[in-house]
Image (tube, rainbow, N blue to C red; front, side, top):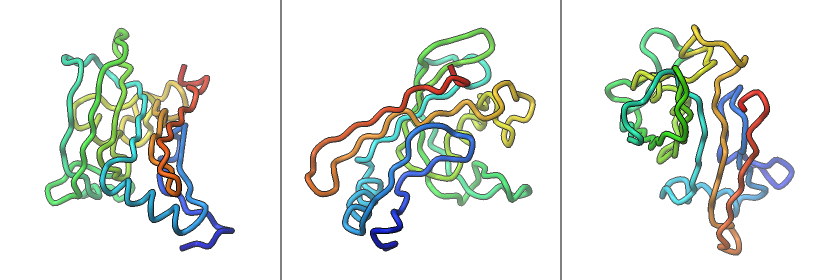
Length: 168
């Protein structure tokens, strides 16, 4: 698609989100990885710090996401938006904040940030969706793990990125 000199990003992350991305070096790899994204076998796990205390230990947000009706820089949960599903679980609780893991079933723009805000727990430091909390200079969101089948050999592969210092 882009030729071997121009890898294509298969799994991207938002600006000011740390962690892993996936780039395909050729068309065959791109098509195979894109197929895994489509059939939900390419796993993407994020870690985040959300504002507030969660009542439950885990849950799922299944809410469509589309362009915000007023602010074109934002996305929002909107009727008629594209299907979006985020599974979350509490990793640790702190006074006023919760450290959570988010597993993506879909991959919409700003999905975790929008879904966490929609359930009343915006991300710490998210200048776009939670401007009252700017403690670390960016949203506390980290693409921690990606797992997929190698596009050529079929071998199961899993990669993790260490937590950046500002997030810790």
